[in-house]
Amino acid sequence: MATATLTIDLDAIANNWRAMDRLSGQGVQTGAVVKADAYGLGVPRVARALAQAGARRFFVAASEEGAAVRQALGPGPQINVLSGHMAGDTDMIADLDLTPMLNSLEQITRHLEALPGHAFGVQLDTGMNRLGIEMLEWQAVAPILLEAGPVMLMSHLACADEPDHPMNLLQLEAFHEMTDGTGIPRSLAATGGIMLGPKYHFDLTRPGIGLYGGRPFDTAQRVVSLSLPIIQTREVQPGEAVGYSCAWEAEQQSIVATLQAGYADGLLRSLSNKAMLWDRETPCPLIGRVSMDMITADITHLSEMPKSLDILGPHQTLDELADAAGTISYELLTGMGARYLRRYLEARN
Picture 1 (cartoon, one colour):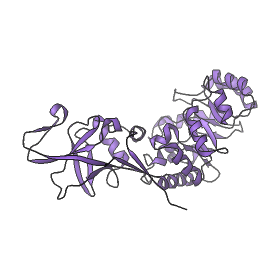
Picture 2: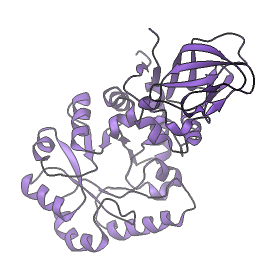
Picture 3: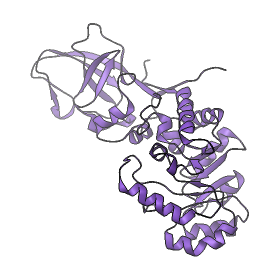
Picture 4: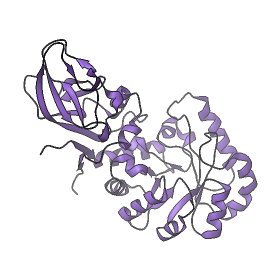
């Protein structure tokens, strides 16, 4: 039976990491962000490919994600938990040698009391107002906390994908004010920060979306392609409608293909009547509403009836599809449904 197939190029992910590593510059370590199941692409395979490429420090959102990375990689690589030391996570952090990025006075107290001597980092709020210790709090606790020996001081840029945004410099200045003279390794830049240049790189960079082929790393290798099988084709007469709410109406005699994928598979409803699919080099408009399990495309102009159409591939990137949906590549990637057959490409050594 034909199945919608998501192809994931592990070599492209590894090559994107190497490119980010070169951009980070000499003397700067390059980590890898693999949160949300490696942006929806499968953390066991992706983390191993990144480790083989040279990554030694990985970033996840929660301790449970860190457990999956540790299971994939075994002992050795540092796994940093961005949500910090949450209540109930102490045993997991200790048993799996996870490194929490402490975000609050409450987390600092919890970690130092429950796991004295266990590695930790500190996340500082330089203006994003999301996670991290604020300036006045940091000034109060830094003398004590720095004695405990954090492995890293980090912060996160709010507007790095907009190089000219004034927030970038404001956060850079705040990060210097909070960390200069500490002697502790520092990290400020994710993918967007790497693209801003060396003054944002400090000791460690943390590429995420750039590894998976998304903006703002515009020269990234393409990582994902998605091919959708055609379930059925039919002739539609002028004036006849297709799909829910009669959202598309034929102006001429048309051939409509129904394809196996929908919003349950991460194809957002906002793609209705906007996206494009491809039969090799030939575009085929997505017509009508995206439904839970199916989409429809106009294939009237094709000389032969294909068995499938591509919605991600050489002629439509992840960012282009995200633009059509009115969203960002992160949302599309992390929403890729479990029903896809996942096919990994990797050179055999």
